[in-house]
Image (cartoon, rainbow, N blue to C red; front, side, top):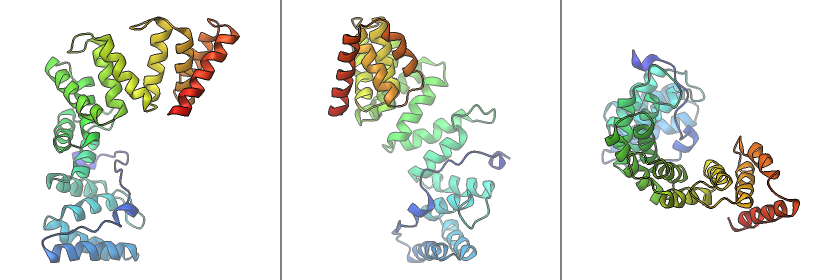
Length: 275
């Protein structure tokens, strides 16, 4: 069965956070079962909590369904039950909860090479969240359409979702959008647009964007070759955790005098002070 396979923990909202949520339901009985279930869990009465939450969940209370999915994922005091977790997660997703839809999509495609992944289901559920304005859903939908499909139509749709998320300040969406303009992936090659979006991502301290700017200035790709700028961006990418930036920065050292290296380091310090 699909829902019996083991997967990494997918949930981004931990039980301690969910405990603080008060869900207002038009049905006082459902709301009561949910709130009493939460209270029971907080009091350590785990069996009672599960029973009350199931009563609410069985009658369509999406918050209770989502809570159950997290508890069965392995919450403190509750035995892990992957099948039950998936069951309640899917119910909450079908009930329209964005968080559940996003996590269900991640279940179907978690970014790990897994022969059991179902890309079509992942795309379906990310599209559900994306259409509700969920920025994470828009980004991940764009990534799947961009990277998991050979269809030009899907790539054009990826650009649309990247653009929506990028306009709301999602750095990875900005960077990915920049790459699509840079490479002419289902859109004309446009170095100016590429540089604009990659710069926006770098402004948000996205390491891959910083590193890419370093490469561009080092190689004179789409910009005038500038080893000082290349060193600056490699240094900034290194400081922000990019794994290859230090090696490239060291390779750039031989292209600069000590005085110019000092200039590049001062530019990096100035950038950090302003961001």
